[in-house]
Image (cartoon, rainbow, N blue to C red; front, side):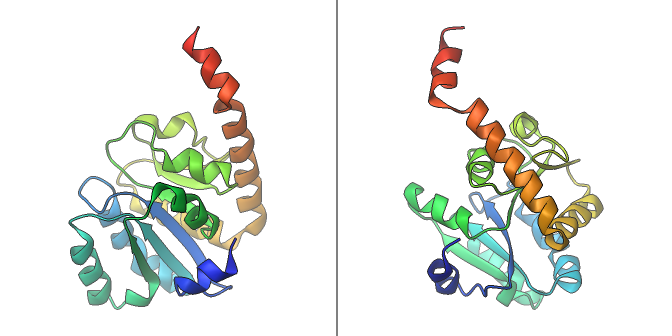
Length: 187
C-alpha cells in the first residue's frame, strides 16, 4: 500500500478504495457500479472507485460521475502498462469484477495474490477463484442490492477483509504456482 501512489491519485489515507480493472466498455459491469455508487457513497462517504483501464466509454462514465455529483469519488487511470497494475491493486482495499461475459479474468487472481478480497458477479470463470465468503463474495449478476450489501460489509469490517484476503492469497499460491501450472499441462 504505497502512500505516494495513493496521493498521486488523490486518495486519502482514510479513503476506502473499491478497484475495478477492466476496459471501459459494455458488458464489463461499469454501469452496475455506477448504478450503486450513490447508495454506497451515502452509506460510506470515504469510498472511492479506482477504475483501471482505458476504453471508448471513458467520457461517458466521467460525465455520468459528474451528473451524479460523484466526480470526486471516481478515479480514472486510463490505460496503464501491465507492470503498473500490481501497484494499483496494492492501493485498493477490495476489487470488484462485474463483467457479464468473461473466462477467468486476470484481475481476480491478481487482487487475491495481493491479499485483496474480491466481489464478483457469478459469471463464467469467477467462481473458480472467488469462493463465496471464503476469498470474497459471489453475487448473482444484476443483483444490485446484494452487491451494495457485500461492498458495505467489507468497507465496515477490516477483520473480514483480512480473512478473505488471506484465504485468497493462499488459494492463488496453491492453484497458480508455476509448478502446479506446469504439472496441469501433463495431466
